[in-house]
Length: 516
Image (cartoon, rainbow, N blue to C red; front, top):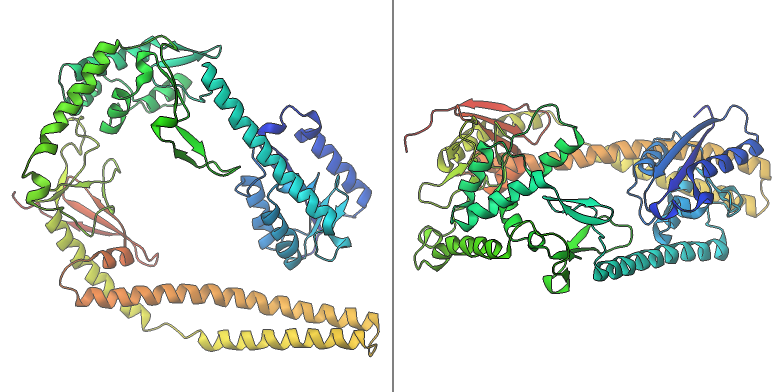
């Protein structure tokens, strides 16, 4: 690396917004002033900013970009306002300071904590820094607990703590008010359900009347769409609406919770732990209609559940090795497998849209499996032909490991000679620099060989699957998982197969549908 590159890392979490001393601009001024005092001539300065991200983990866009440049060897120094700006997790932050940065010879500076890794030879600065890590991590956990407690107290008092309100409502001055445009759709859904109409009939009516789905309506209100809307409602959307008590004026909060501090992953909470307040806000639907709609939905599903010999019992559970891999070539949605004697993959997304190209689009499962098995055998032959020209990497890898051991031994012997006074400090540093240069070169070669070895190992697994495919009488899940990424089925009987190995392009097969 020629030019000395310094990376300024700046982070501002949502909790820091109220603190002016933590603002992005104040951090930038502090870092710029410290860099000016360092007087490093012709240094290139890069800036990385994470605005509104927690420091409890490293899943932040700017820090990931910074770490990738470090892995590529393009950064010499990282400078932050304090250790908490880089990370509040003691274990992860310590790992980068003690292992990653020394490995890549990165100098790390935390200005307010008076920490400079060049003064600690790769360590984290002893007990003082360790205690700072503990304080930062505990502070983050304490803030998180206080926020959770405050939100729960607000919810119990009936104050809104929801980021997004239910479809049909809008937030006005921290209150829920009825959005009349969307509320008309909600009333139509409940009215049709109370009259005993099925979810498919409701979805068809909404499609015919061009009522956008909740997500499409949100885009419409923000004026971010230029291509119109499909207005295709799913059964899960309708069921979610028909079971939501918020439409009769009941406030509901606490349906989910965050397990780990700083994690964006939420898990569902048992309904017994939800916060519910009746008559909290204006109701869109009368409770009589709400109860009638819920009762009709339950009644429509009851006969299927009470059958002594239903479809599932007669044909057991129909399965296919292609389940989860088959998608509609028109709309891109996963096609579901029907549990009937003549099992078929169906595109259910457009069941309420008769003018769509893939309306009632299906493909017989046994025919599709036959097509895929035939094409997989062709692909297997190509894989085995390509494998014949593969070269062995085992000997090269062994030589590199031996060379690394020799270099490490030479480095140890050099240090022992320096400690025993057999060589001067100047001679030690010169020879050590030469050994370190050779060590870096050999390690880079090892990285390349390791990646190649992983690829070879992966290909070896695929070769075994290719052999199994040629010997198989029927398609199996192991063959599908090893060779096939996606199977696209089109209404004109085209089948397109995307293979897992990038060396092979997609296969397109023209088929003729069997009469059913």
